[in-house]
Image: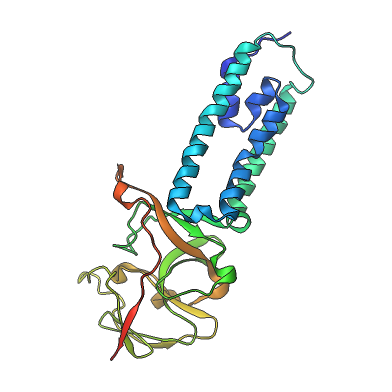
Length: 280
């Protein structure tokens, strides 16, 4: 006979998926809770509901409700069965193995979420895309977008530089295009491109406002930040190749800077409007 603690059951489910259920003698529920985050991610990712802000917020609400319910449920079971006999699996080394498995699945999920489920959230730490994307914005990226779709002008693309570093910039040049800057004005194939989304010129920086024509190759894309005077992009690092494109930024799902939550930015779309251009 052993005394089952409600607090232990609660904390087990709260901090280590399913451990609380295993502790109170509910192994089937333990396996359900262990797989719950990954099954949920698969459902919302594979259905592409993750790309719809309202659906994503509904999912987050249900997930939070479940995160509260499962620990409380384990604690209730512990209270009702406080003198239950221990099972064969109620051993410290089983708990260690369970925790190790949970940590392993968590690491694998975070490492391969983009490839397996088709989405990945990012946080923006800098000002290179002001005013469209602000520091402290969290946005959702569709990491399957460019498997079956060609990149389009005006999209914010997430791309890799090296093995770990990722950037987000606006796509302003496609393969075969000629890109030029004259005093900050973008010319694509000799035509002036209207860019109402740009940040105002910052006279203190005046970075890269003039650039001679750059002819893009068959697998090259030109990207720049909306705050042109404060953005390290293709002007300095060169064009981005197709295999470096990690995904497309879809919408801002959360925004917090300086401890202030910016509710008005929740759900803001980052998809491009029609790009206008006129001949020079």
